[in-house]
Amino acid sequence: MKFKSTALDPFAIHRLRDEFVAGDDNAYSAIYELYAKELYAFGLYLHAKSEVIEDAIHDIFVEIYTHRQNLAKVDNIKFYFLTAFRNRLFFLLKKDAHSFELNESHTIGLEEKDHQEIWIEQENNLEKEVLLKRLLSELNKNQQEAIYHRYVEGLSCEEIATLMNINYQSAKNLIHRAIKKLKAVAVLTMLLILFLIK
Amino acid sequence: MFDKYYTYKAEDYLNDDYFVDSMLEPTSESETFWKILIDDNKINANEFISAYMTLKSLHVSKPEVSLERINVIWDRITETNRRNMFSKKRFQIFRYAAVACSIVGIVGFSFFAVLKNEKNGHTPSITDFAHENIIHTKQLTNQIQLVSGSNTLAVEGVQAKVEYDANGKLKVNKQSVAVNQSTNLVKEIQEFNQLRVPYGKRAFLKLSDGTSLWVNTGTTVTYPFEFAKDKREIFVDGEVFAEVFHDSKRPFIIKTEKLDVQVLGTVFNVSAYKEDTQTDVVLVSGLVNVKPKNGKPTIIKPNQLFAYTDQASTLRNVDVENYTSWHEGNYIFHNEPIENILLRLSRYYNVTMKLPSSASGITCSGKLELKDDLNQLLNGLSEITSMSYAVKNDEYRVKFE
Image 1 (spheres, helix red, strand yellow):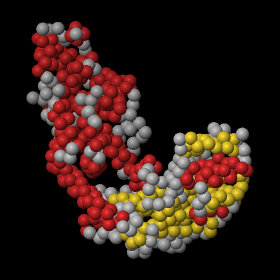
Image 2 (tube, chains in turn cyan, purple):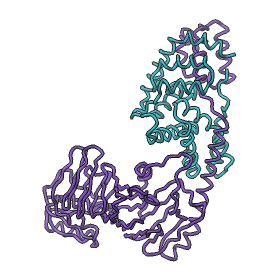
Image 3 (cartoon, chains in turn yellow, cyan):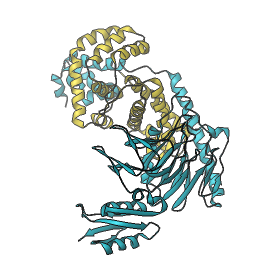
Image 4 (tube, helix red, strand yellow):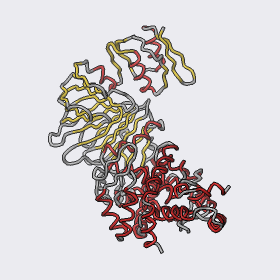
């Protein structure tokens, strides 16, 4: 039943953080290994271009290297990096005229065509693609992002609200509505999943 | 505590923090908890499994990330960090050497570097760069700073003279500043320099194309290491008086928050403080083309003022001296509301002033010499108007009777 492979107990993470703040480069690379993949996956989920995702990851880790003290009092390191990454990513996406238009409420620029192409390329698995498309096409962009944070990243509603710049109740509602819609396809989901997951 | 689960539907589980947490990060305790509930037939197993499956299917949506890319980014990160450390060390060495010639600090500037950011293949625009870096200016150290890439040169004193010659060689307050040509340093990521002048300070900036800029207090000027072949672009937040070197092949463009000023060769003043609602362009000689972000382009002729706000823009004839005299250390004004004069003075002398919220209706004409002591100037204004002021905790409180 375990989904997460990178789970590390909070004490170990805080120890890493303290070592890094004190100047330990090994701790720095350990922290990178712990979170970089997760950030990258989130970027891909938002359908950002790989170059932009990579620039964003690069920028935030360079930033924290020169400003280690910023991390000293941070309790939830993963949330810290997720926030920094999301901000940086949206900033870079806005800058990049060729990428999607992002409006003020930070909706994700998902296009049906891109969506399909990327998933085919990403997953190289048509059944999965059909399933996910089915699932996600029921949801709007904000709902898509919110449920990813809640059920894949495991963030709390408070954290999602902070991250997405919305109030707590809105975050709660986003997820609530997303689940309602997902339930409608849940039967189909189950059938498909039974074939996909051993 | 578990009886609430007896009637749970799939969506209730998905809204339940304990359920989600124990699926994402199961503990032996949580596994036992759910196992008992299911085995005892206390809960509807179908609903539970449906919730579990939905959760699981969302995990399928987590994109695959290649480890190779993760390693490539890591190499890039360590390379950037190494480079930053290198220039920092250099900064420290030069710092001591530079104290002797009254300039505080220096770094291996890479003024020759016009390397594009090869990794991205695109060049960040000057406006993006300025926006990204402008925030630092106002919270400010109280020193004038020349920033180039990750390097910062702080200049002491109230005024600074920063001059580039045609080859990009730099002099600060008439002292040559060693430009480092080390190949490592040429690889700067950022292609722009920034002159940051805090409130209470002023600077003169001569650019490599021969253009002179008098930079007023509280102003940041962003300019490239080297101008492009077809145009000369700088970004200004604040106020500058510009004498643009004539080059018909390369128009000179001053970009600001609200508008762009395009010229060939001319003398004019731009006041575009981000925190001011109004942006002013005043032309002394030549011809300029002003392009507001919202609104139609306007040609300005000598002795005209183009005043732009988000709501409206106006073009009228003015006495240019009122707008440009600051660069010679004077402040001349005709029928100017006293509040505007005090705002200008507070910027020039970097003090906080508290004014009554309602306009006094007082206007003044005259000339102030800005090298004078601020209190002397305020006493002068108090004598000729009904203004009075008091200083409390470094704050000037102004009253009109």
